Amino acid sequence: MLIATTHKNTDFDGLASVIAATILYPECIGVIPKMTNKNVERFLSTHKTAFNLILPHEVRHDEVKKLIVVDTDQWQRLDRMDKLAKRAKGESLDIDLWDHHMMTGGDIPATWSCKERIGATVTLFVREMQKRGIQLSALDSTVMLIGLYEDTGHLTFPSTTAEDARAAAFLLDNRADLNVAGFFLNPPYEENQKEILFEMMKMTEKQTICGHTVGFNHITLDKKVPNLAAVVNMYRKIVNVDALFVVFSSDDRHSVIGRSG
Image (tube, rainbow, N blue to C red):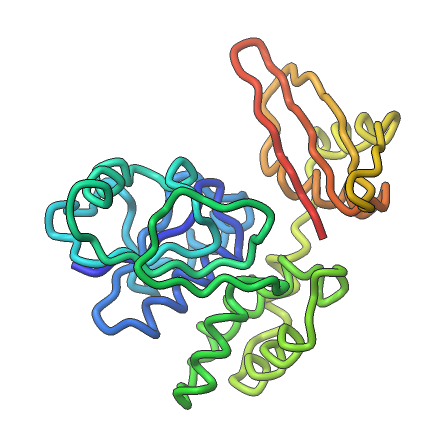
């Protein structure tokens, strides 16, 4: 069994990269974490059956011969992959790793890896597809374009490279649908999301670390707010910092969401 998976709270770059892996690797099955971003959840509610995807509880761990990890390099961010983590320590398990996050070294012992400082992980997959002369369906191209645009801020984030732009051009040549992309990239904000955004904007602690402006904030939640990651991403753009960390606290838990661009 050959599987590809990505981080919990899956964004579109993670989803797109998993789908890209199922195209690049013959017989590969994509495993999408149970917890995904709200816009990814909306997309999968209508399009999941078009792709070769399963949930983590459907994986037969003892039969997995190769694992492909995309858009993260940390075991703790994967969903229900503890058995494979133990196998990776005690016996041979081939692991291919694709990621564009270069800030810290992860703990997944990759047999082979493609890690580069680039705007989106899916761009790395598109490069390989171009090398192999692979032509994509309109739906495949569209979800990959959504992932690329989401992680590069429509090619405007400072982390965006010329190769990201060329990857976008390739996906558009393969009939990526900008109307569909626009719908999922710009979901309407709910009232409680707007309230959180306005609350964060009242005060932002900023520090300069290694020449980069980093923002910090702490918000207390009195109810569940969906898709906080998207709200934090918008907040980072508004306060104009290189990176941002927000601690969200409720009665029974604390969580940290970080965004950079």
